[in-house]
Amino acid sequence: MGLNAALTVPTTAQRPRDNGHALVGSRCGQCGAVSFPARAVCHRCGTPAPAEHTFATTGVLLTYTTVHVPRPGLPAPYTLGQVALDDTGPTVFGQVRMNGAEPAAGMAVRVRIGADGETPRYWFEPDRFAG
Ligand SMILES: [Zn+2]
Image: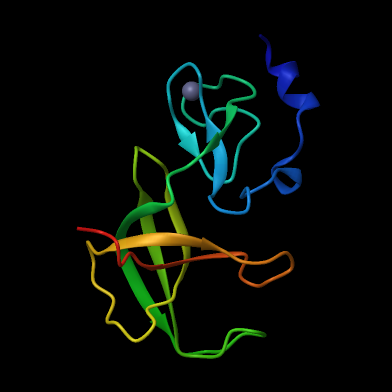
């Protein structure tokens, strides 16, 4: 398959980023590289049109920071973090809603998908079911 196949697939902005309960990206059929959002061409090996892939809804908070400057619809302070999704999923950047708990690197988190039009569309929360 040549790279021309990548020209016929939806652009990154047109691709779904979730399915209503989990984040959706791509996984390369050749090398296994994962991406969020999905890519038209694998960033590791150059294979065109990696397959759409639904990622695990759980992960580990790798690092985080507290933002003290509000933005429309998002009053300060709020927490942003990098989360490594389970099952060899990608590392995803997003809001972390601690719901009163203190964030900690290594803590188990779970993705939440908002309603259509909600901002942000997805965020992470502490995984109260994690052992
Ligand atoms: Zn690849």
